[in-house]
Image 1 (tube, one colour):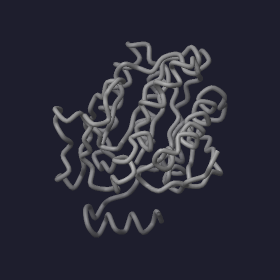
Image 2 (spheres, rainbow over the protein chains, first blue to last red; image 1 turned 180 degrees about the vertical axis):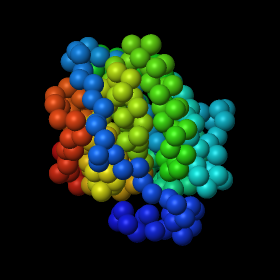
Image 3 (tube, each protein chain N blue to C red; image 1 turned 60 degrees about the vertical axis):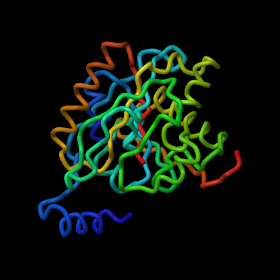
Length: 159
Length: 84
């Protein structure tokens, strides 16, 4: 994908003032892991628009996107997960959820003691969100909740 | 996802972010990035290629433990359907 073409497309079709956030002149926030990963609780966070079938779906109609997130318990059967996200092809995750949301593989690594624990509660956002301030606020709330549950590391995957 | 990673990191959580849009990662600058050469929709690799998917996870976990450079990008060499 070409960043300039993407920006032009967004300006023509969604928001004439669109631009990607540019952090190149800002300090990069950085927290070093205190213990090794074998003794750390890890959370999986996706932007695949995943949610439980009986949970509220994401808003795919709003051209500015949906900044909210949904909880997905670690033992969830892939058949109970639905996708509301119109900006990527779902064919790979429909064949194998591990392509984008590898709860099964991470549970295996927990059993093998490669990671300390996989968090009981994992999360999905819906990528493609132009409401960046709301998104940051929600991420902050989520971070505080994770920290209070002793989650110290996050594997974050877009789609 | 870079914005979410940065907010988590500010609040004491160590993050690694997979990425498929390198130019965007260089601009948003997540604290630690694993860049993959896979199509959108499958950041961990092709369906049922468990060994490749586990390799991507392993590289991500290594970066969580070892990276000392804020904003570091690790470009993985693996191709779609690679046999590991």
